[in-house]
Length: 638
Ligand code: MSP
Image (tube, rainbow, N blue to C red; front, side, top):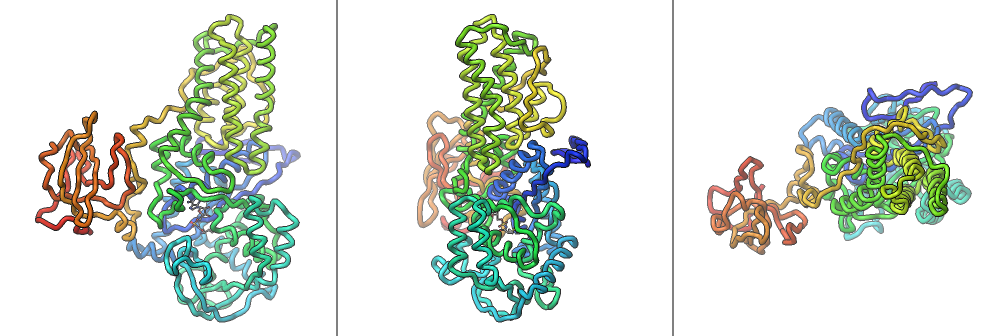
């Protein structure tokens, strides 16, 4: 059997031959399949990176991992987004699929397959599945009258609305009255309750398991699983005037893994847990398939408490962030910042702070000081441990060796329970202990320091392996400096093998470079970093482009670049900080009518708040955008 392990470039693929006598146990992990009305967000990237970290971990543990992600294309949202982009729906879907794949490749997602629900192989599966559900007598025709939220692609109850709007999408749902086909969800209520009660790991975390259990206990109604009047999607095999409801169609994507089914782990956001923990298992029971082993619902990345999403206009482009701060920084921050199952705010500043304090100052510092020292003092050759050590040194040496030996087990125990943030914290603790050890041993002042450097070099080897699931780029770079055989992606998670004394290391290089404050300031708002061609007209409106009259303007103390302007916007005045001091004198600007962006979140530049942004050309010498005739301050620009 041939197993492909990782990675980024096809050329880098490492093939391992596993004798068939040592057949590996399978591990099948999935992400939700994402809608294609937008490109990846911080949210979808989080889910996918989380799944990637867990998939990578199980690969290193020696399992035969199948990791599936993909796209949910048969949604009304696709038709609308294509219309807005003035593209044919299929062409739009194909283009979006390329964009998603490119982002996952940029983020080094190691998926085994990429499913698109517009593919023939999926359609075939859906048709087969539908016929099995029909066979069980679980489909019937009925009248549906109710509310439908196109954002959720789901029917919603009046009681779930907030001020008449869907609580997630903040839009009023549509009233729908249709003859369509229903699935007997109610028939499986009892079985589902029993299954959830008997299998404590089926829904994680515990708090979500309780929610789902209570919901199921309170009763489950049959659900409509087809829609009329839509020309995009999979036609109902038994009535071609209807298409299969997009969720019924989408969930079946998971069966594309064939022999890997049942899934060991479905990773989803808490918003779509009910579909996965109730509807999907009921569908599987009806079609007489096995149930997934567990479903993990994580929380949301938020922006000041609001869910981050493209439709809310507050998401940055993850590939851009990876480019700006490094993929290590982005992956690390996303994985450590959301506590298990909980929500957490996303901010570029927090990303930079955590990266600087934890990866640069802790892990990076330990690795670099050790390797540089071996390089400077031992010509890059790992020294032999001392035969005899002073009592305290001996004790510390033993302790560090023990910690190193336990590292994979400790971190692995967290990962086996999907506690990714805690796993990373264990690594940080270990690296902290390594730094302390190095500090206490003071190898620079003691001639007999072979043991310290030998122990530290081996601690680095263990770090390289346990970091692989989280930050594969860094892990590769560390491995390269250690000059060890093979690919770090193909190592055994708890390999006991030690680097031997006499082993020659490669030249040390800094693995994590500090993120400077200036970089964080470069773009205060996520909207700045969205790619061209992706804004809907609603997004555009949110920019709040207006004409503003400059009432006053002055230089900002201690800054050669920044000017502070007071801008009249008709109904209000706003302060604006702009980096144009080298090109415009304050007195030149007073009285000018300029174009201003008012929809951005305020940011502080050199400690001064900027409540709007002026527009200027991105040329070598920036030129301000003005208007050719006099217009009233506050006039909208479209
Ligand atoms: N197409 C459905 C899923 C079908 S699965 C059979 C769907 N797609 S989605 O594009 O809306 O993706 C939703 C998922 O994206 C969430 O469940 C979550 O995994 C992820 N996230 C989107 N925004 C998020 C945050 N702000 N924070 C964390 N993850 C969130 O629903």
